[in-house]
Image 1 (cartoon, rainbow, N blue to C red):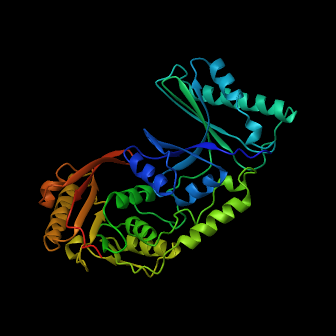
Image 2: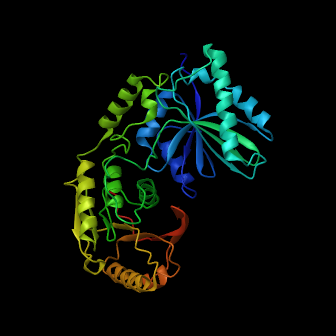
Image 3: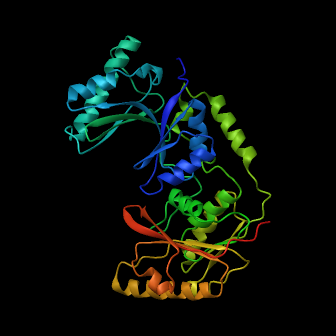
Length: 381
């Protein structure tokens, strides 16, 4: 099998954090990163499939863009898919299911689009391999046909389960913040490992754990596997080299001051277990306590948090009380910065201060504001 030299790669992400993903990619050396709605496109090689899956903190998946073309009819779709050299990517024994979606397009039946795409891939592979049947009992190559405004984009998924599944979490509590979104909030703040970090509504510990991973420069994908590790055109030595580089990049000699607390003792136990699995058990202090008892240590720290929302009236009253308590704690920390993601429209009123910056984000499908109350930056060292 001839290994393709250059690939068009797509890092998918939630709406609103495309610029964060693009900045991550540029920091990794991909200068041509281009943002679109919910995705960032860039050029790479098979080795970059390994690097980006290991390193991207805020993206959901890394896809290979196989083709893009107008598709007003099923014949357009069939011929566009069949024009791809599928044998250059999928071996004769590969398993290749097809997912699909369609928006504002003539071809609105997703099952029909999936079926036509599958048939076109099979017909092309029949020509390439000279066989009439494929057992599909080998490595997984998940395809997607995505139609938007009558343009079909065909992609190959290198990631498998979303990149938010880092491998350190076995149990979650209700309404968790995804690891990718937690990392995005931290990267959008001005926090760095030389500053204290605290989350007084930490739940199962996602924000403090992601902060520690960032602080020590630990690649978030180091503890998980990917379907592309079994692909012929991404050899084992590429993965081994990418993992070795990631291990070498860890800076675990940096002292961290990271803590989190929550009123739920069960959530704190889950947080401690997750931190331990991430290799950070002794680096993060978790405490079971209400926000009213929040006390911070150090100067120029950052509180980054996802406070409870409160869906029922009794809960809303409790949430208002907690946000006011957080606001009072902030008065005692004039050199700290506070960051909160919330769908609550009266957060600032209850916190007692107007945000210096705000940014619209989606936590799952819930539209939120990321409110930023900025304290002074620490003096230059």
